[in-house]
View 1 (cartoon, rainbow, N blue to C red):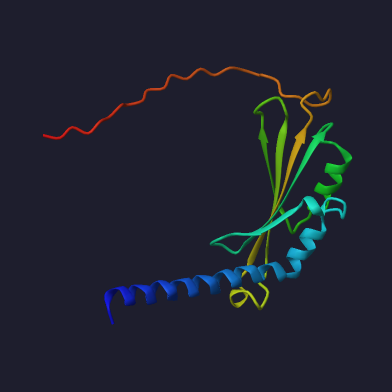
View 2: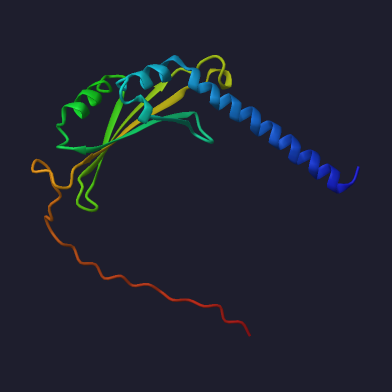
Length: 163
């Protein structure tokens, strides 16, 4: 067998193994907890909810974006957040003040037992994220400058010198 033929066989076997791992990760989507998390989003929003699986992890991502909110106390947002406010979910909030539109990302994480069809039942992590954007002209919520920090940056310039 030639070196090329051996390399082709090796590459083909690697692709088959990766395909098997990919199908195993796709099976995580059949976990009842994933379906329950997806269905926590109101029916009217579900067409705007994305569902994906981590390429090299046992993580299922469920994401949606809510724009043009009057504030972060908007009833549509608070009702959705309440659906993930339980002992099962670990919550985290990130604030962003870029541009003039106040933005918060609400992320809820939950680990559930793996379904028997996925990777010998390894635990599955569900990450549900709601990207919430308040209108830039909202009278109830806005980005304000609370201070200024000046920084001096020193950066080296390098080049290769050969004899």
